Each structure stands twice: as structure tokens, then as C-alpha cells.
Image (cartoon, rainbow, N blue to C red; front, side, top):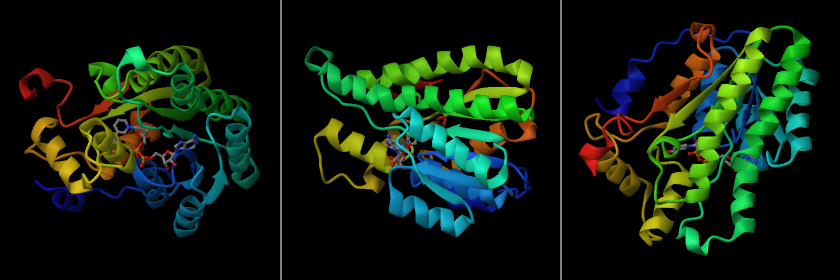
Length: 275
Ligand code: NAD
């Protein structure tokens, strides 16, 4: 079935009526698709990103709010959550989605300051998100759902980037340990691990890795479909990931915490058969 077929089968169930959600990296890609889906399901959405024009336009389109937020800066993330509190007096869902692609190249040549800069966004950005969302959720006494973007790289590793892999694997441990602490407050912390969704980040990563600056999004989709998916040769879509995030954010996942939901068309389960 192609992705249009999948879309046609989608069930619209308004699962987030009245909920307030902050989505980091929500201006484009997976974050933007999730922002739209959350809004369609009745949520009030705050998009927190560094792409101000794109983020503000999308927020306007979905009747949400936009806030400039560099997740590597704790103050910015705190302010994004404050925006939810000022607007609706609560935060129910925090999607820690912002992330950047890896550095590539051999570990023997890695520049430590570049590695740390990546970890500041991909990992500490999520630490900031969990910390300040949990604070507000605990004070609000209404529980909550925190979802963090890890990656298939956390499970399989990957030659594309050691720094990316280390940040994404650390997120899994962080989510498990914070889930242990926060469950008593009714706060669930889960991860998603997508794979092979042709976003700007993935396309630029493939261009660097394959040394081909002209690689088009459809080329990346084809490579993933051939080598990185068990499902009828198709690659993942933003919608595939957004639907998984919606599930984890909703009460349908009320007894799920400390979990990593892999969205990869079977890649991590059967990788050895594909290489
Ligand atoms: P994308 O590049 O389209 O989106 C990333 C978003 O994060 C952008 O809106 C970008 O502006 C934002 N961002 C980057 N740095 C930021 C910062 N410092 N502060 C705030 N926002 C920042 O890529 P995507 O694929 O949609 O990525 C979303 C998440 O999914 C990332 O964490 C990524 O690692 C993860 N992921 C994606 C795939 C995939 O196949 N696309 C696979 C595994 C994991």
C-alpha cells in the first residue's frame, strides 16, 4: 500500500481535545506533521523552533502559538513551556523532537567542540525539555505525556555519525530513568525511534555520507525503500511518525511509560537481511 492509501485509512478520533502540547523542532518535518495532527485532534499546540518564519506560519495555520527556542539553551526551553502556561494555564504534552544530523567522518578526526555542540542540541535539548515540562506538570497536578525523539541509530549504530548515535542512545536511558521518577506524578516518558523518513535532516545526511550534493528527496526515499524497510519497499513518512507520537501522547497509551516505540518499517528487526 502506498502512503496515500495509508492516509486514506486514517481514523480521525479527536484524541487530544483540550490538551496543551509543546513541540520542539515543530517548524518542519516530523515535528510539523505532528503539530498538524495534534491540532486536528483538538490540541492547542505551541511550536518551539529556531526557524521563525516557517514556525510562525505553521502556528498561524493550525491556530497555535510560535516561540523562538534554541533547545540547547535551557532558558529558551523554559520560556517555551511558560508560553503554554501563559496561554492555557497548563501543559499536558511535551514532544522533544528537535534534532540535527550527525557530523560524519571517522572518530579519529572528530573535533570535540563540534561533537559537544551536537550533543548540546540532540541530548541536552531533551534534558531541558523533560526538566521544565515535568516541573510544570508536577505543579499542575494533571499528569502528562513526554515523548522524546531517539532514532534507529540508538539501536543499530550507524556509520553516518558517532556523535548522533551517542546522543540518541543516551536519550533512551534518560527517558527510562525519568519515567521511573515521574510515574508517581502520573507523568509518562516515552521515546520514539524513527528510521528512514526523507526529511531535510535525513536528505542532508545522505548527501554528505554519499558525497552527492545533487541527491533528491525521492532518491533518498528510494534508497531507504530498497535497503531500509521491510514494508513493500516504501520509506517512512512524516505521517507514520506523527501517528505514533499521537498514540503515545493520548490516553490510549495511559499504561505505557519508559518505552521506545520503533517506527522503521522493520529495519532494526531485520537489518542483517537487508545489508
Ligand atoms: P528536520 O530537519 O526536518 O526537523 C528538525 C527540526 O528541528 C527543524 O524544524 C529544525 O529547525 C529544528 N531544530 C534544529 N536545531 C534546533 C535547535 N537547536 N533548537 C530548536 N529546534 C531546532 O528533521 P526530522 O527528520 O523531522 O527530525 C526530527 C527528529 O526526528 C530529530 O530529532 C531527528 O534526529 C529524529 N529522527 C529522524 C529520522 C528520519 O528518518 N527523518 C530518523 C531518526 C530520528
